[in-house]
Image: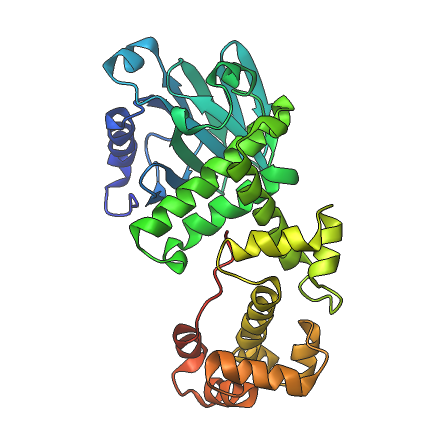
Length: 341
């Protein structure tokens, strides 16, 4: 949804009306009422939503009057992508920049602002996850210790949550469109938010066992993606890096219908396929691309590639370069590896 079709002088009123009519009603103020371009991407996961927003500098306020009109009992988890932010709730007033999360809830008044950084030519950008507070895997009475307090999105569970939210918002279709997929993504979101909060409260050990297992799997998957080029990456090294037994690591993947080695191989093959279908890498030998992604034996790579895609690596490259469907056509017919847990 964008304001492109709305006359510039009406854009601020248009967006303000949408905000005031939303389940979490707010009042908007801005110095850019003469032209307030807005771009919004909204993903509905059933129990939760993920929304990316881009607009000029603005201030937002939710009052007791708004709350009396309607309160869904939601927690908002906002990640600032660009610009500067400020927020006040529960008597805590904070300022922070891009790369930080902020948690706030719909049942208490709040005030916030986002300002364009630098020369003001780039809009503010944020991504917000909204989920029911009753789904949180930590006591709601501890929520006041978390709201209006910047939490890093660059490390630990914050980094995992930031990556997950941006991946879902960027292309939710990559995971499928069934209700089961939406439920799984909602569970993953709740798990990561729960761990982010519990880590700050030093109560991770009190989280439900299943939530901790799912979060551990996400940590393992993130570790694998970061070390995918290392030919020494294997179940033993992964287990050691996470201080668990190799047997337990295998069990984590088996519960998802996967094996560790096949999942790693699938990720590596997908990286190779993308490179082979990219004309920018046309001069790079097939063996060099395979080696870059951890395949040390060319014959093993070729057999695995043909088994996965029904084509040899050279066939994929030739089709892309010859224009038989272009690289995007090759990408469209190849299976994607779902690695979000």
